[in-house]
Image (cartoon, rainbow, N blue to C red):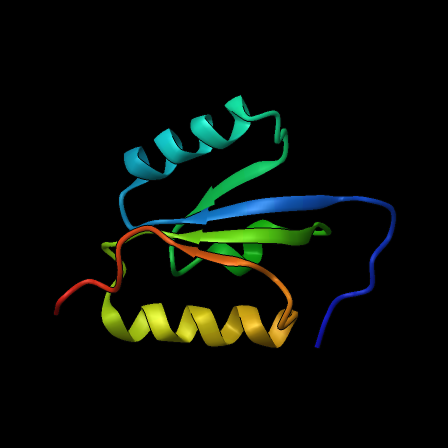
Length: 93
């Protein structure tokens, strides 16, 4: 179920198992004038959203296959219209 929207508090979420890659992508997105970018790991991304509304999600390539598909499902449950950008594909376990 989608969260209620209060103002324009949208955020872009970068989810990657390696913090340094997530931070690099965050810097690139911010360079394109998107100020609200957050980096999270697959196990804590939902807590990182806070009161924000997801504008888009970038998924890194090293996320374990099961987590990868659960993340896609969980994002779809929040709002099926949230764009998901895959950086590579699910990790081979």
